[in-house]
Image (cartoon, rainbow, N blue to C red; front, side, top):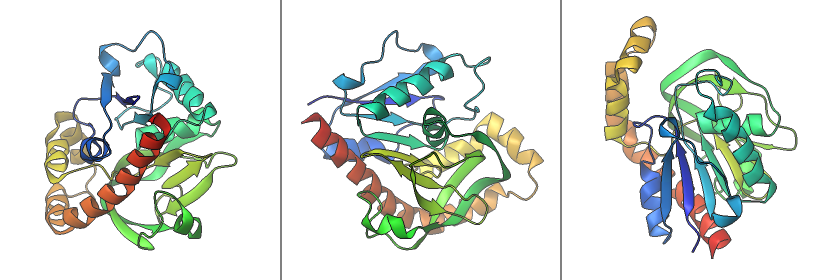
Length: 240
């Protein structure tokens, strides 16, 4: 069985529930911490799937993070051969850019718990089929993107129209975080850079996020296990 590769941009934005989903599908995986050194070559044909995780940077911050330019190319290569690709938050923006769409600041920063509405097209989708028409999910992003040409919109929200999309047979961009656990959310709230950001965003209350996490995390984790488990099965079929 070929492995799944995950690209990580910052240590605290890891696989979360994806670790469980991949292991339950009988898949092995490796994680590349891009700031520590990007791979010299990328061979998508040797993989069962590609996961691109979140991060605080913008996809166009190549002067600060030179590996972002290579990363866009790797994602494009993976999509071109039909490899299962899952982009989360920054990863979804990376997928959109790789497909030729514009990535830019959203009118509103979404940090915390927000509702998203699934599109009618999600009803028959391999990942989102049989999910509720409206789900409350965890968000932490300031950027958004145009829907790539020939992509299918799967989810929207009042503050951010393009929340999830699919492209081709197995590529998915998801702006929100289905992979998070309660411990991950608490860790993010305590990260020094995030604390500075939240201090300037008076409409975002970290304690309110904590209260809602207690109320909502079980439902989110059930949704995450369903959707991420289905992505893992796509990878399993590809790598078998």
